Length: 484
Ligand SMILES: Cc1cc2nc3c(=O)[nH]c(=O)nc-3n(C[C@H](O)[C@H](O)[C@H](O)COP(=O)(O)OP(=O)(O)OC[C@H]3O[C@@H](n4cnc5c(N)ncnc54)[C@H](O)[C@@H]3O)c2cc1C
Ligand code: SF4
View 1 (cartoon, helix red, strand yellow):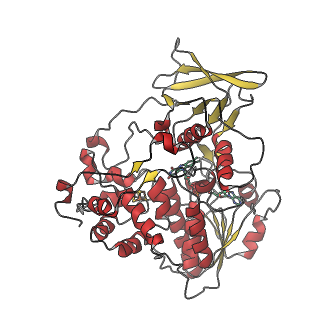
View 2 (cartoon, protein in one colour):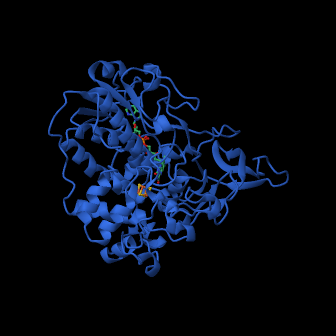
View 3 (cartoon, protein in one colour):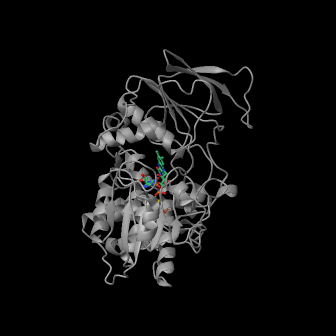
């Protein structure tokens, strides 16, 4: 266990950010890593608790405390403290295919569950995870793991977000012939086209894709499965060609705000805005008219990760002002640990993007948009009570030339793939598949990630991708040695 008295002697000390003025001038990552000595010191704070809530309960149910992929955190903290980085990497990769993604963008429920968090000083778990995997890549310890025996079975994976990638990698390592079908030009799903480079640079995805190709995974880009777009692949063909099909197409249907004035120009879904900027940064062609925040008063509706990414991107594009509004009331500054620990608490959090200069308003409902010459100019808002009912007399106006709708995603898109397969949906409109077998209503078709779970987190997508691969391997071979 790290150093026996480490948590008594060493204060929590985490990575820090480059100054705002410097980082908003570009789209590069701005988190400054700890030195090797500092990382080892931080790992030494781990107490190897009798019940380490940080590494999770093994449950994949929403709200389960700790790390969703069950990273064996106390074990690798000790290995880092002992300077055995290579073994730490081996251990970390035994539960997480892509720790360089989670080490950058996971909200770290593990740290909320850390015993040291009872007094607000959790181990810097996410930082240590990132340091292990970055060091592993630098030292060439992450060679492709090519299956020594091929099974002769083939699997199609539809969608190359973190769920599809994790599923495909596990299946290829089990010896199956895996083909990933992706409707867009590159792999990564929301990791590439939603999350901005300043949170996670895209060469990290390219490196994993190269590793997976060397492991035998074939990627088919610009290949939407279902629908009638150019290059569309008929889902019935996939069912004929492959021994199993995994649906990992995400939850892409955005929540809209159907109020008066919604059709004015200048009101866009967050993903339309974010995808364009991600494409610009990577040199991909941008389709449609440019959506830019430059010189504009921007209002972001919605307070989650997507809203934050819209703020950071608007600021980098040179917005005149950025205001974020949220219908929920402001959460408490601090949680009541006696009630919440080891679960993820509701409390006021300020993302790095919000800290770059957004005004935040809580308990606000937008009642209508108003404009001039067909373009949005203002939002007519009102404050709401705890039941989201308008409070008379609290009406106010926000000036806006660009409005970004970041209110989450309701479900997967039904048209195309899901409609033509005729797969059963759950009451929330996600693909119905249970957490043990990941089987859908259609023989040999499985589902995982946001497409099954509804909008969630990258770490849950990886977890579901791994579990789904295990279920497919079991289905194809009658038994499986793939880890959870
Ligand atoms: C803007 C934004 C920011 C976020 N920030 C964070 C964050 O900081 N931390 C975090 O943990 N989570 C974050 N999330 C959530 C996280 O990105 C998702 O939960 C995760 O990516 C889901 O993974 P997935 O593989 O299930 O689906 P996705 O990542 O959505 O990938 C689905 C893939 O399937 C493809 N596809 C869909 N239909 C078809 C078809 N018919 N044929 C072929 N291909 C198809 C899509 O093009 C896409 O590549 C964010 C989400 C958004 C939108
Ligand atoms: S994947 Fe997320 S929850 Fe798990 S150890 Fe890493 S930061 Fe923590």
